[in-house]
Length: 216
Image 1: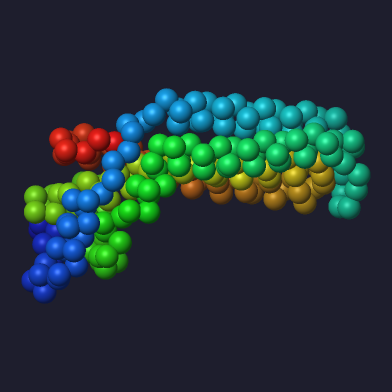
Image 2: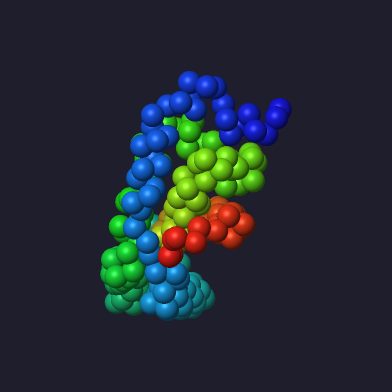
């Protein structure tokens, strides 16, 4: 199959007025600060909290606190509440950072939102290198790539959720709670890995197709 066919598609789709509407929206897209220091420090603090919470859970389990459901928590209730509060702080902190750096505005202002699912898939294929880049719609492909990059920083929310779940397991280290925490950890790490991989691909696309007029 000709790779350009995934980019051009049927004539009626290419002539869809939604393309023009999306391009007009892309020209008005807000810019964001390029990887602000505040966001970098948020990642450092969030990952530190996650590591401490994980170490604390290991310490709890090593004291033979794991008991059949239902059972006592071994006196770790307060520690569990503190860790859950730390997870909530990570989530709230991300909200503050996203507001200060313009991430919320950039995330909500998506030029490609007016496109159909098939049209967005065609742009995504260009970003992933699976289809030839259409110069006429390069601004929309860039917008799609920036959205994937933004999603990587939204992983801070998942870190907060994971820390909260670790806090529940610390405060109530029963077999079912620990098993659910382990399952949640695997799922969240899988989602994080997928989003991170997509963000790296998007960054490579933006590096190969820079936009001199965009700051972010």
